[in-house]
Length: 294
Length: 320
Image (cartoon, rainbow over all chains, first blue to last red; front, side, top):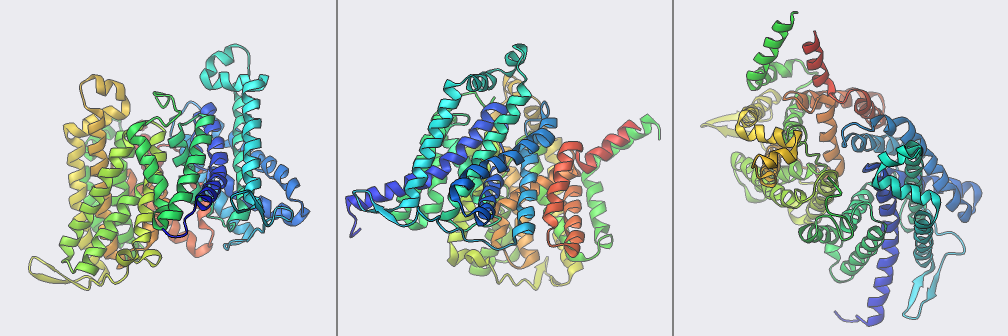
């Protein structure tokens, strides 16, 4: 390939990391919910889409992107709280597939509600002022917004890690993921923890929606391909693992960026080949524990 | 009705389930508002029955069965349009193509267990979607495969007008009836018993000496073949294969049908397909946002009627 330099290659890797950041955020939300509640949230893509639309709406209202970054996760997380409390909680103790089926149906409701509220067509979401343009990062010019995306993801992952590893509440979450029965015996209301974790997980999905909005058109169906990609990341990284979600998310992002450079026609398919490879070699995922899926 | 009478009624129904289903389907076009809807229910009913071999009988929830409906439809359509294969051969090719994809997806998906299975099948079917989407010269890409013009078909030396909706219904019914009979035999066989054993208790089935992974794989491929046949028939019925046939929502559609109808029953998926398509038919005349109602109805069924329509009816008959 002519014109291929080391700088171009490195630049493409950074592009992949930026792309992977969105995957990381999505997979963390999915993994967190699964790790605690053993629920695969099939409405995760829909929560992501709702986050993007809420971002469009609130940005139009407030004209302040930073405020939106705070309000959107709170708003989407609140929807998550309601969903857990009134729809998912009655299903605990029933067939393991039931919450999955319910959230799948919920995805339809979300998509159609957004179509009613905002119309069938996509809405462009322009990059917020102050994050436009490109900066020189030594190997070439790189869009500032994507750089911001990488930084924001890093901060969020670090914060979440500190929250789970270093706080008392995080200790309860970790204990609950291991053995909810013992936690109940110790006098902790597990259902409240589950409620909150579902809220946090969906809140992160909403945040990834608004963060990804300037990179693509905001449409009611934007969550559907994203759901499949988030699943690929979770399967590659291993369900319920934070470090797995981060590693696999970045890996998938870089694979997509690299195949778009060398074999554009393979870009869409490449991540599924990666997943197939991982399934052949290590079915529980790179950082997953064997036998976790019972 | 006394308890023994209803019990013997159920036993009778179970023994002759394929024959009863076919008997209902024979008079079905006269019960429906129009024939095209009857053909749709027939084809998607078969799709749901094939799917339910995994979901209802083996306990594996696949979210990727659009890959088999779609590859069956495309296989049949491409054989007809690009290679001029006779219609009967094209149906066979459609089934073989879906068996090919089911073998690959099954091989990968059965390596995972539990909740992973739904995620992996969803992701792999998305991959199949992109493959067909990008092979524009064969599949027509975004526009779908067009030009399946089947006006007259030869059956045993007779020429039959395939454009007549009633004739079309009965030609397609012949295939569906054969598939249902085969399906019923399969469930009644020792293999069918092993499937249910795996659903009830996988560890115990393994302890009994069954090669659980192999049985799951075979069930996956057979399920794919049934769905592929449904896809091939769908292609003949619609004369076009839209790319949406392979879409995630088509995978979800069959999950909805099986659950709405009743996943642990033989007739359930067919009842579910009929309920789904009738609901769609009625609601789309009233609102363009019918999927909101659909999603809500589905959520209500998961919460309050996990046995589905037919399963609840059966439970009610048994209780009486």
